[in-house]
Image (cartoon, rainbow, N blue to C red; front, side):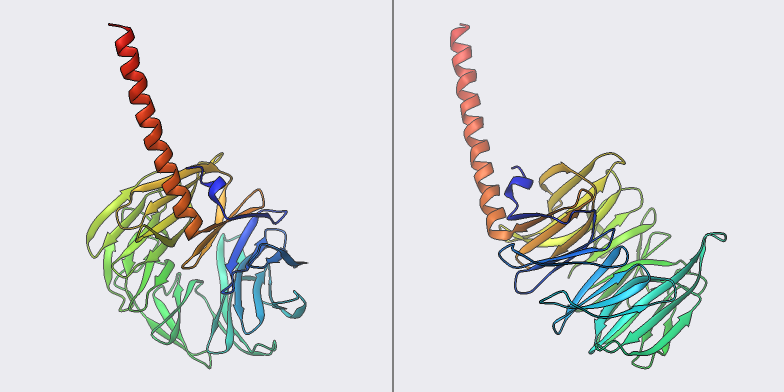
Length: 356
């Protein structure tokens, strides 16, 4: 199957795509490396365009607001019009944000080129009207921010490592992990919280080591039964408890996400990059079977819900797949394949008869 030809919608941002968000009503928001932000509705019609001060890395929606990180700034826009409601410059780069209990939490970090390290980081708390309520500074960089068990958590780098809960007043409750290694990423399900570490260890919400992989973990996707890890060496693997269900090696993984169902099995989508050529791979999440793949531009942005998946590419293209159309095209492709196989077998028989 031609994966790109089966996309339900293709749109252009006009610059490399760095952030995507799928709206519950069917719309899509896309942000770019140079600050371009566009919103399309469920029919694919462009609703509005706005340019923010710098690269957009995170998008979040809540209560009619669009929140975005843009370079040093956290920005709030009116979701239906794109009108800017407020903007706040942080101390250092605006790395991430999260909406939790009717407040906006943002993470910032200051990087020192001379020392090749992060000097100071902070967690910020804003009201939706733009009021800054508090700021909590720390030496460690929070590499991931997660919600679990009705609390907000940050996974930390050196010197302290481990992870901390953040309360409503900005107080941090630190938790150590079995391994003294920086947390690089994290993922949650309804019942669990997992962290990936620079030394390859995966730990849980108790700080216990679940398993140790062979190299640093770039991203994690938690499932109800285990996790899918993208490792620094390009390995993509699915592990349930201590059992490795499947593993696939290749070029470095640039993005990964769980996708919609195909023939009653969840899909998994990932992007790879060789340095000159990209590739998109769609797999059966549980078995690792490659369902389809195609060459592409570099892809670092992905977003998904129960019925759609969106991927953003370095050439500015945004492609959205719909579960119903994807399954129909996949099954049509298999039918064509079967017909071609029968045709090929018949031609072989005819050639054999002529050569008798």
